Image 1 (cartoon, rainbow, N blue to C red):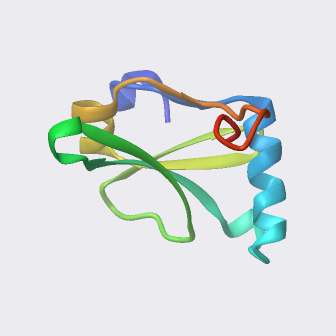
Image 2: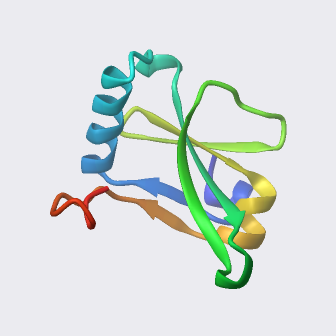
Length: 99
C-alpha cells in the first residue's frame, strides 16, 4: 500500500517490529500469519483510545502496510477519519512507560 492509495500512512519502528516478533513467539502465534492490527475505540468523554492487537484476519475494508517483515492492518475508515498518520514504536522503561 502506498501513501497515495491510503491517504494516511502507518509505519512501525525496527524495535517495535522486533518486539512484535517476540510477542508472537511468546503467545505461540505463527509470525508469518500474524498481523498487527492498529485501531481506535471510542473512549467516551476522553476521546479515542488507540489499540494494538494480534490478528490473523484481513477484512475487505482493511488496508495493509508492511515494514520490517511485519504486516500492519488497519480499517481504512478508522485510519483516514480518526487516526491519521501513525508510527508504532516500542519503549523500554519502567512498567508504566514500557510498551
